[in-house]
Amino acid sequence: MDTSGIAPLIWLAGYQLALNAIGWWLAVRLLPEERTAISRWAAFLACLSIGLLITGQRGLQEERVWWLYNGVNVVTLVGFWTLRRGVERFLHTGCSEREQLAWVLPPLLVLALVPPSIDWAPLRTAVAYGGQAAVMLVMARSITPALRREFGNGAAWSLVPPMLTIGLVLLALAIRQLTQWEQAQELHLDTGYNQGVVYLYLTGSAMFGFGFIQLVALRLTHQLRRNSERDSLTQLLNRRALSERLDTAWRRHRRRSVPLALLMIDLDHFKAVNDTQGHAAGDRLLQQAAELLELQVRGEDLLARMGGEEFLVVLPDTDLQAAIQLAERLRSNAQAQLGVTFSLGLTMAHENDVAPEDALRRADAALYRAKAQGRNRVEVS
Picture 1 (cartoon, rainbow, N blue to C red):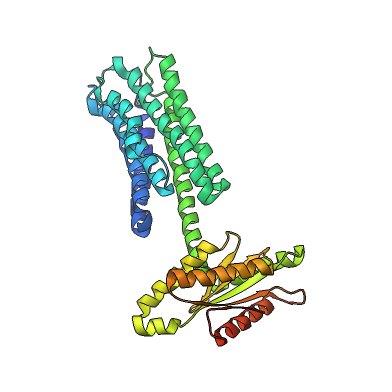
Picture 2: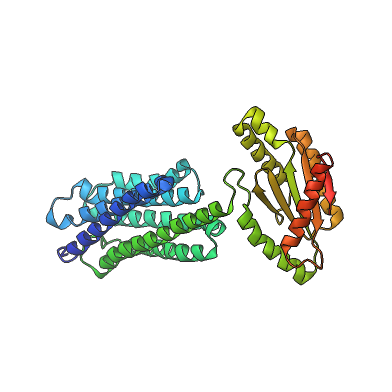
């Protein structure tokens, strides 16, 4: 069968994938924190490119040498395995490399060991497409929960269905070769199916590229948003982020008439720690205090560092008695676990409060009364 008609298409696809691989490798310099995952995505594109460029040479050489037929399939399958490792590393999921090698080694051994002759072409083709399909389908299954957990259902729907589609198409190609054993379906042969396979590789790699760019951008956006909302030392909410969330809790309190408690906390004699032990010791103490507070509050509570050694806890759906119990528990735990004391000012949102700032002022006033009356105590306003 003639091979000259499809060779330019294969070379063009290989050239395009090579450019994409170079682009991703350059991206490593811009995104060093994702170096491992991006390097593996680039390696996948490079392997696919090498495989296609070598495949395009088959029509120029009559002799069936190993690297033209077996080597191409080995490189391509290694590329698909590398893609899976990169995606799973990016999402911090998936099985170990040893388990993954158990999936990919059997088809690799078959592709490496069978002769390159035409008699073995159907087996090579079926194993190559089947191995690629297995990687895609298993990867789609393994990354779906992690995608939903970090990026939401939208990202999962944008990436997983195309991945499943490509995997199923590759599986169909493997089955087609198995059912038409007498007619080899090697990629260099100029058939409509093989042209479709080349376009499948191009389209699939483009979809993955757009999908990965989307995921990287989303992760960076989430990190930037988190960094803008978090105190750099304690990783608690900062004052600005707390203000936004407090407004939401306040509206819910007014709309549903549910109780809302505010608890202002101050580390006693913190300046003495900085003066006698140094600012590094003071920073460690603030971090330990933040960890203690995080362990004691509920998931729906808001916890923020207001500045210096002051913290604020916003307690939705919490009555006065429960808020006092929490405040006393925090006070006693600080003394027992950190060797320092807390002064705490507690208030409840009132019906005549115009804005949450009214309650914040009362909590702050209660805190200063606690400090003025000897510290290491809870005052309610």
